[in-house]
Every structure is written in C-alpha cells, then in structure tokens.
Length: 308
Length: 249
Image (cartoon, rainbow over all chains, first blue to last red; front, side):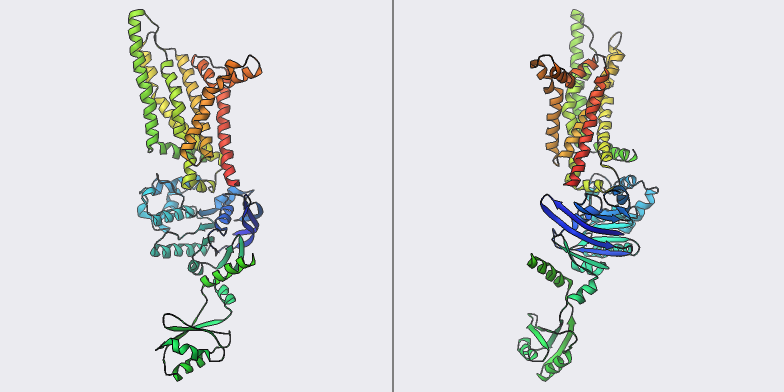
C-alpha cells in the first residue's frame, strides 16, 4: 500500500507538487488524473525512490521512501512515462538483466510469466530496438511486473498502444489490482473511469478532488440532463419544450436533437413526451445523459485556475 | 558486489556489439603493432651495422600509454551519458541497487574490456622475447604492465565521472580528454618554472607521466601505486556524487 503525507517537491523555485496527501490500499487501483505538468510524474518518481521530496514523507509497502529507499524499490514495479529499455539487448536478455539486479531466484519462470502476461512470449529472442512503440510499452510493463511487486506504479501505461492492446493492458492492470496496489496516471478520463476504484484529480500540484468515478459524477452534476430526438424539425420544437414548467437550458443540437436540463428530483420527462406528441411530432428518443468525466475534469481544473 | 558484477557484465558484453569499441580496439592494436614492426626493423638494421642494444618492452608500452589517452575516453563516454539520454537512468535509479554499485559496475565493465585489449598486446613481449638474446627483462615487463593497468584504471574512472556529468557523449569525450591531458602532461609543466619547494614537489608528485616513466624502468615505489589508485577512487566517487545530485535536482 501507499501512504503519502504532505508531499512537496520544488524544482529550484518552481513548486511541482504541494502538500499532497493520499492513500492507496491493497487491492485498490488508484488513478492519478490531471493535465500535463500537473505533477503526476513528479509524485510517481518520488514514490519509486528516483528522487527525494523537498518536504513531507511517504510510505510504500510499509517502508519509508527516503530512509528505506532500497526496501521500497525492491517491492515496487515501476513503468516510467517512456518505457526504459536497452535497445541493444534482446527482450529476454533485458528481462534477465533486470531479474539479476533484483536477485530473483527462479528468473526463467518469472520472465516467462511476465512475458505471458503482456502477450510477448514470441518476441523473447527479438531485439528490443526492433520493436514497435506498443510492444516496447508492453516490455516495459513486463519489466515492472517481473518480480510480482506488492505495489505497481504506472505512468501513462496505455500511451502509444493500439485499441486492442489498450483493452489487453487494462485487463492486466485490473487483474493485478485485485490483490495488489496499483497507482497509475493518465490523462485519458475514460481510462480512469474504466480502471480505477478511486480517482485523484490533480492540477498544478494540488489534489483537486478525490473520489470514486461514480461518486464524482453524482457529486458534480447539479442538474439532470436529457436528450430528446424527434422526427421533424427540432429547431421549431425547442421553444415549445422551453415553455414546460421545470425545464431549463433548452438547446437544439446540430445533430437534430434537443438537449434540456431540469432540477434533480423534478423529473419533467412525462410532460415533455406529452408536449412532443401534442405538437404533432413523432417521439424517437428520450434519454438521460450523465455528465462525463471530461466535463467534470474541465469544470474542476477551470475552477482551480479562477481561484488563483 | 553481485549488483556490480551484473552491471559490469552487461557493459562488457555491450562493447562486443558496439562499433566504437571495435574501432578503439583495432586502433590500439594496429598502432602498437605498426610501431612495433617498424622499430624492430630499424633496430635490427642498426644492430647489424653498429651493434646497437636490443629493443626492450618500452617500444610496446610507450605507444600504448599515449593511445589509451585517446582511446579510453571513447570507451567511457557513453557509460552514464547514454543512460540519461535514453531514459534508462530512471530504470537504474529506481532499481534496488545503490548509486555506487551502478557507477562501479559501469567502470568495471569498461576496465575489463580494456584489460582484454591489453591482454592481446601480450603477443608483442612474447615475440620480442624470442627475437632478442638473452630475452627481455621479465621484471621490467611485469612492472610496465602493472603501470599501464593502473593508468587505464584511472583514465576510465575519470572518464566515468565525466560521463556522469554530461548527457551528451561528445561533451563527455572531450571533457575526459582534457582532464587526462592535464594529468598526463600539463601538470608537469609548472615543475620547470617553480623553483624547488613544496609546490615544486607537489607537481612532481602529481605528474602521472613521470611516475609512469619510473615504473616502466622497473622501479615501483609505494606512492606510484597509491597515487593512480587514489585518482581512480576519486573518479568513481565524483561519478557517484554526480548521479546522486541528479536525484536532488
């Protein structure tokens, strides 16, 4: 597990992260979400023992990241932003080298396991330098998984992968997340939604919000929204919908549908349906739409900039 | 120890697939070989006509010391600079190894490769021993080889340090060359202008070339061994500090 307490990092005069405090328990996948330069990579580098924090402390797998750095590094699997590979080695040689550095007793079996997990068994004898970007990313992941670490820290794990590989890698992460602790960063919101038990939204070095993806949505949606689709001219229909009591923000969409909002708990959809029929239109679709994480994210990071 | 060996082994193997290492090895062996043949030919003519003395091991060791001045920076320039450029330094610094183990492992890999080249040059003293009568002085030969091994050990350590300061290989190469030239040549110059005294003695002490000269004549003083080993340790220490500094930036 990971316990972070008041972590701050300064690069010269620039403060990259400020007073970060969070926890990731065993069997939990925690997503770090934020725009570029928010401090995700910095935090991960501190947690993996790459560099010490300026202030604050953190424990990973029960060990202090500064005073017991080597113990932490033994127990963490880390995939940096760009997969760190030696192009002049074969995939097998590279993983054997990492296994030797980690003093793994049954290196051959563990290498086979790791390669199988990322689906790269057939490329074991190929040179790392000859691999495509997606394959390199998977070898990087195999390196992180090699010693079956208690804590897995992945910086943008699905970047550069094709859609089929993305599905595959997400499956691996979810599988590992059942028993171990996974901290991953991403700026793809659907990924956080699909993978994470908890999401930390980080912007300009601060945690803006911390919650499960579902709660985040529920918490931030002030009004319920629905989409209405009819046969006929939606532009003409829109003013009629707006007349209904409780309906707000009616907008005719370019795709011919009408979007409207209403206060939570005051479902006006029956009235809307009746109005449509009364006006002589055929009702094709009437469905609620949730606020996407994208919108929540933009909302939060925008608010944060306004405060400054 | 185990980690040092793991890293050294990787570096050593890397030299055998790297073109630069082959070019360096070839250059060293070719130049030493050509020099050897020409001197041998010249001396044999002289001996026939004027009865000159037979050549000794210095005709192998002398050029080697000079070539390694240029060859070792080429072997060390990528050691840590390349790790930074390729982003694998992050992998090494988050692996469960100490920074010192990484640095010493890198240096050891380069040292073992250089020892391999030096081992090949042993054919020249063997040939020389056959050609001359009563053969070459074994003591001088051993002393000379100890001297050259101590020399490359410190060259490589200073090169490793330079490689950890820069993320550009060529910057590392030229910085190493400059530092080696200072210790090999420039540092002896003040002894000509400073009259005897503490500073004169200091520069005499620091002059690598002078120490190398006396060692290859078969005289090994304790300080002749202590000084290059201290420089080697200093280079590795500086390199370790430089790697640690990268963490703190």
